Length: 442
Image (cartoon, rainbow, N blue to C red; front, side, top):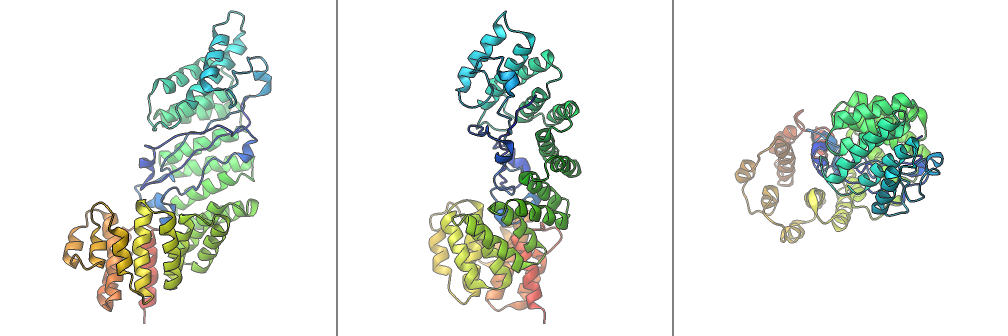
């Protein structure tokens, strides 16, 4: 038997998913309800989801920018009835106390092999819970103890699918992604409808960059539970990575039909509409997301970008200003500040003083900001480019700078550079450059 509920894989994407693996944690407390009510993630797109499909800032993602553990937290009653009420592998009793009580069962000469197997498994879960907040690749005593305990549970009961599942999580957490896949595969062999094992195996394949296998596993999960919104969203995300935007749209649309009150799904779908040039639909989805989560800086940033794409610069500046207020730090804020400045200038306002005030307390200098403020030359700004991403983004900003100065041909050249195939698809700079060039056509 395996637990009926699942905790959450928290996905936080900084610039690509491989860096996400440095910031993983779990929090399973309070998630022992029905699995359908236990969302596995926040926004699939992660911290930078508002800038476009950041997973394609490739060198990659994960969405997953922090990947967090997913643990099942409610062992079956048929098993727990044989054990001490505080050796359950579920919230309600301190994990340290559960370790003590499970250990007593393991050490007792009166315990049956079945009881000891379950006690080892539940003690392994407790050890895993104590890894919360540790980075992926962590090899702390608790992680290794969890792997050892779950290995003993498997030795005593090799038909316990959930023990393989839990050990897969522990192995993943300690950096053994391929070993985790092997354990998830065995769990599925023992129980062909083990939906959460498919879900986590899909995550592991995604971590390895095997998108097709990831999609296949999410598809199996959806077969088992066609109304699983998180599985639909997750598959949609991977389909985007594969370039199959229409299938991704279908998944997000179905997820919205099932749960029309989930703002991140509207945001995910809106980003696809933006990339495919359906700006009105994108803005409508971002507006829907804002209605559900009015204090989300991400959603205001997304809608601000949509207004910018549409040439509604005053509306864009208003949304981007709200995004800056709600998300005052990080790369998102930098983009919001720069796009807000451009929106104000394009709307006929002067955003220079606002920009100067915003960056006054920043550490270091941003070359484009210095150019916008008249404190650096074009030549100095170009020399500050170091990476392909810098080159694409700077080309867009320089194109806008030339447009504001009325230098259309110079602007066209820079914007064409920003639309190069070497610039990541789905980034706001590339989308905005493509649309701007269309506006410039005679």
